[in-house]
Length: 162
Image (cartoon, rainbow, N blue to C red; front, top):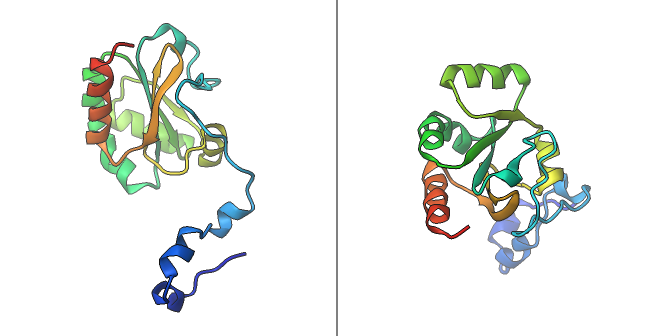
């Protein structure tokens, strides 16, 4: 197991060594799948009909992620203005997710999935994370910083010929 010592942060060449640092929690795991644009989105248990939608956005959030929590109140407005299918995958206890849906009155599907499951299935290592799908195929996938990034993606794909 590799550890970083405080004094190593300021030693000559520290930046290069730290770029190669892998946290212990990730060292023991098997590599996560690489999700590539053009691949079919693994929708089992999420939604069965992505292929029938010319445009769909799947956002993955965690209830332990501050950026995700900041974004939650804005998702209603985003989903109502987005012309495609919108689905949120959320890690957290079922009770927390039900309270969240009721509190914000989300009109879109919210699917519970543990962080270990979405990491193993999609290779997501940071939240919030977004996938854009066209006919069930991934066209964009990346970590976002908040609602503005989600809105930017929606405007990009709206102007694209899908």
